Length: 232
Image (cartoon, one colour):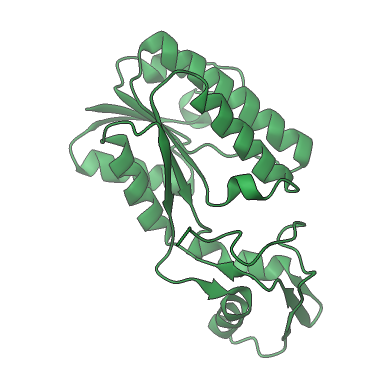
């Protein structure tokens, strides 16, 4: 089966390429470094030619509200058009668990716009929504740190290993389109407090005080307790 992975140079994209190749599929690894530009559409037709499925794991270089919305809107519009022109039969996109429940986040609004463009395109699709990557928990901890204090939301998080995300995305790519959303998450739902304490312990950092604050934000956005975890 011929499959095009767009965003193949990223964390998940590289893993998906490796998994699908190991399974014997013909994989086209598409990225700016291979001459494919999702913002201009350059190279998309060639990259998708003859492919039965495509995997979209692209990400915006900027997380500023206007820029990230512009990126996902333009990129998805171009990929959808190229998919239709080349007869791709399955569009798999990686998204985020809870994405439609956090409208005050510019990034989440942009991902919702991406999903909407796909679901209304007429191209058969599967949306894989994942919880936050376990590999990013230290960065999340850093984002909540000010001096010797880490202020965390009174909410849950469900870290999932990037390898598992890539495996689930690769599985979706070789399966029939669902025309629906699949939610995937890590094995355990834990508090932000626990996540931060584990992150600090890994780095032998005992200088920080962890404070649970209902007004603390996640990258500028207030959370409900279950905003970022898979449904029961």
